[in-house]
Amino acid sequence: MAGGRRGPLFAAFLAAWVVAVAEAEADREQAARPPEQSLVRPMTASNWTLVMEGEWMLKFYAPWCPSCQQTDSEWETFAKNGEILQISVGKVDVIQEPGLSGRFFVTTLPAFFHAKDGIFRRYRGPGVYEDLQNYILEKKWQSVEPLTGWKSPASLTMSGMAGLFSISGKIWHLHNYFTVTLGVPAWCSYFFFVIATLIFGLLMGLVLVVISECFYLPLPRNISEHSEQNLRSEEVHLTEQLQDVEEEKDDSNEEENKDSLVDDEDEKEDLGYEEEAEEEEEDGPAAGGDVEKSDAQDPEPPREAREDEGSGEVGDDSLEQPCPAGTEALGDSLRQRKSQHADKGPSA
Image (tube, rainbow, N blue to C red; front, side, top):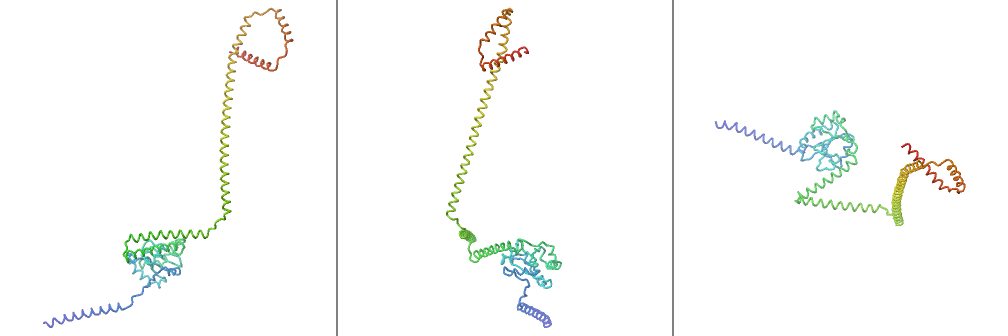
């Protein structure tokens, strides 16, 4: 009984031992084999111009990015079928190549780009093999707007952007070297970069000053003095013109004031003349009434007496000398005024 029980147990143990040995040998063989070579070509700042010829698909990733790690297997499968699809497949590590990420202006990870004879387009679909294959076979990239002008990775603008990104990447690596490798505190590293930035700015300013002094041609001394004299003469001329203008304004103001005073005096004289004329008009009717009253009271002389008086007056007139012209004019004016007053009296 005991021998019959030991037989199946021994056989099971022997089979388990054989399986374990076979698995160990398989692991050894697999470890001894060289790793399968990836068909995805790493792109760097030195060989990225290869994408300017032919058809390419590029993937921008970072080793710490989980989404990038999920698409690694799909991207490898897509690269294996690259010969069938007649397309080259590449990848760019943004940590090692910050200049390329700046040239393509990568802001999200993972990022995919399609390139056809130097014309670049952004692929915004999922990083799944089937979608990538259909994108190439059905030529869906033709309906995507290309990156042209200053947005093109080959443009001068994006070349400058690549330089800025590469400098920032080097500064970041240097900061990690200070803080991680050497164990320097972070604030010391920041202080060092601030001082380095100030010194770099001063040096650049000094270089610009030296360049300007080398290319700037100073004017001769005679020309500079002549120009200064011209400027001074122009300034004196301008000041004289301003003074003349001010004097003209003052003279015009004085003339206006004099004219206004003369007008006021003329108006006052006119008012005085009008007042005198009104007083004379008021005195005229009263004098006319007195004369009429005196004529009415005096009795009319007889006819013979009047004839004698008339003959006497004629004689007196013949003996009198002629009156001057001024007295005649005054008499005429008095007669006209009396006639006017006489006309006004009956009408009133």
